[in-house]
Length: 123
Image 1 (tube, rainbow, N blue to C red):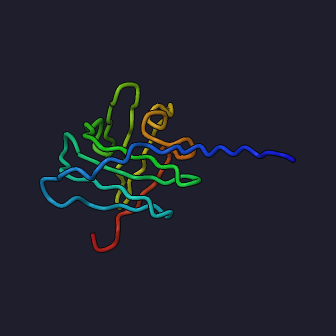
Image 2 (cartoon, rainbow, N blue to C red):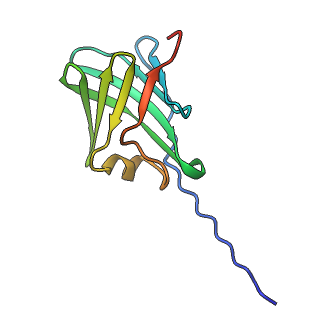
Image 3 (cartoon, helix red, strand yellow):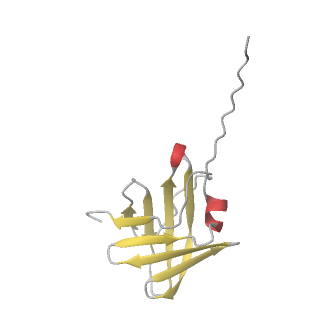
Protein backbone atom coordinates (compact mmCIF):
# COMPACT_ATOMS: atom_id res chain seq x y z
CA UNK A 1 0.00 0.00 0.00
CA UNK A 2 1.43 3.33 -1.06
CA UNK A 3 0.93 6.48 0.93
CA UNK A 4 0.90 9.70 -1.01
CA UNK A 5 1.92 12.89 0.70
CA UNK A 6 0.73 16.15 -0.71
CA UNK A 7 1.90 19.62 0.07
CA UNK A 8 0.35 22.77 -1.29
CA UNK A 9 2.48 25.89 -1.27
CA UNK A 10 0.65 29.18 -1.41
CA UNK A 11 2.53 32.27 -2.43
CA UNK A 12 0.71 35.55 -2.35
CA UNK A 13 1.82 39.05 -1.65
CA UNK A 14 0.06 40.79 1.20
CA UNK A 15 -3.14 42.29 -0.13
CA UNK A 16 -3.18 46.01 0.56
CA UNK A 17 -6.24 48.25 0.45
CA UNK A 18 -6.69 50.96 -2.15
CA UNK A 19 -5.43 54.20 -0.60
CA UNK A 20 -7.46 57.37 -0.34
CA UNK A 21 -6.78 59.79 -3.16
CA UNK A 22 -7.50 63.53 -2.93
CA UNK A 23 -9.77 63.17 -5.97
CA UNK A 24 -10.82 60.11 -7.93
CA UNK A 25 -7.84 58.25 -9.41
CA UNK A 26 -7.41 57.32 -13.06
CA UNK A 27 -7.85 53.59 -13.60
CA UNK A 28 -5.69 51.54 -15.95
CA UNK A 29 -6.12 47.86 -16.81
CA UNK A 30 -3.87 45.27 -18.41
CA UNK A 31 -4.99 42.84 -21.08
CA UNK A 32 -5.14 40.24 -18.28
CA UNK A 33 -7.47 42.31 -16.10
CA UNK A 34 -4.80 43.57 -13.68
CA UNK A 35 -5.52 47.00 -12.16
CA UNK A 36 -3.45 50.14 -11.66
CA UNK A 37 -4.75 53.32 -10.07
CA UNK A 38 -2.89 56.63 -10.38
CA UNK A 39 -3.96 59.73 -8.53
CA UNK A 40 -2.79 62.99 -7.06
CA UNK A 41 -0.45 63.40 -10.05
CA UNK A 42 1.63 66.54 -10.33
CA UNK A 43 4.87 67.49 -12.07
CA UNK A 44 6.73 66.40 -8.90
CA UNK A 45 4.99 63.16 -7.86
CA UNK A 46 2.07 60.79 -8.14
CA UNK A 47 0.37 58.21 -5.93
CA UNK A 48 -0.32 54.69 -7.17
CA UNK A 49 -1.81 51.32 -6.27
CA UNK A 50 -1.77 48.13 -8.32
CA UNK A 51 -2.71 44.47 -8.26
CA UNK A 52 -1.13 42.05 -10.76
CA UNK A 53 -2.14 38.39 -11.01
CA UNK A 54 0.33 35.72 -12.06
CA UNK A 55 0.22 31.96 -12.51
CA UNK A 56 -1.72 29.91 -9.94
CA UNK A 57 -3.36 33.10 -8.65
CA UNK A 58 -0.10 34.45 -7.23
CA UNK A 59 -0.42 38.21 -6.76
CA UNK A 60 1.60 41.42 -6.64
CA UNK A 61 0.23 44.32 -4.60
CA UNK A 62 1.98 47.63 -4.21
CA UNK A 63 1.05 51.18 -3.27
CA UNK A 64 2.98 54.36 -2.65
CA UNK A 65 4.20 57.71 -3.87
CA UNK A 66 6.62 58.06 -6.78
CA UNK A 67 8.76 61.11 -7.49
CA UNK A 68 9.27 62.55 -10.97
CA UNK A 69 12.61 61.72 -12.61
CA UNK A 70 11.59 63.36 -15.89
CA UNK A 71 8.22 64.42 -17.34
CA UNK A 72 7.27 60.81 -18.25
CA UNK A 73 9.03 58.76 -15.56
CA UNK A 74 8.30 58.47 -11.85
CA UNK A 75 10.38 56.50 -9.34
CA UNK A 76 9.22 54.84 -6.12
CA UNK A 77 11.90 53.59 -3.70
CA UNK A 78 11.00 51.07 -0.99
CA UNK A 79 14.13 49.60 0.60
CA UNK A 80 15.99 47.86 -2.23
CA UNK A 81 12.92 47.99 -4.48
CA UNK A 82 13.14 50.68 -7.17
CA UNK A 83 9.93 50.81 -9.22
CA UNK A 84 9.75 53.01 -12.32
CA UNK A 85 6.40 54.09 -13.68
CA UNK A 86 6.63 55.20 -17.32
CA UNK A 87 3.58 57.37 -17.99
CA UNK A 88 2.78 57.39 -21.71
CA UNK A 89 -0.23 58.85 -23.53
CA UNK A 90 -3.06 56.51 -22.48
CA UNK A 91 -0.79 53.89 -20.90
CA UNK A 92 1.58 53.16 -18.02
CA UNK A 93 4.46 50.65 -18.02
CA UNK A 94 5.96 49.38 -14.74
CA UNK A 95 9.69 48.65 -14.65
CA UNK A 96 11.29 46.52 -11.92
CA UNK A 97 14.71 46.20 -13.54
CA UNK A 98 16.42 44.22 -10.77
CA UNK A 99 13.30 42.29 -9.64
CA UNK A 100 13.71 43.63 -6.09
CA UNK A 101 10.08 44.81 -6.01
CA UNK A 102 8.96 41.34 -7.11
CA UNK A 103 10.86 39.82 -4.17
CA UNK A 104 9.07 41.93 -1.60
CA UNK A 105 5.66 42.60 -3.16
CA UNK A 106 4.78 39.48 -5.20
CA UNK A 107 4.00 35.83 -4.83
CA UNK A 108 6.43 33.41 -6.44
CA UNK A 109 4.71 33.18 -9.82
CA UNK A 110 3.78 36.82 -10.31
CA UNK A 111 5.94 39.70 -11.50
CA UNK A 112 5.96 43.41 -12.13
CA UNK A 113 8.64 44.16 -14.73
CA UNK A 114 7.16 45.20 -18.06
CA UNK A 115 3.53 45.15 -16.90
CA UNK A 116 1.62 47.42 -19.26
CA UNK A 117 -1.67 49.05 -18.39
CA UNK A 118 -4.00 50.96 -20.72
CA UNK A 119 -6.27 53.73 -19.53
CA UNK A 120 -9.71 52.30 -18.83
CA UNK A 121 -12.37 53.55 -21.22
CA UNK A 122 -14.66 56.18 -19.77
CA UNK A 123 -12.05 57.13 -17.19
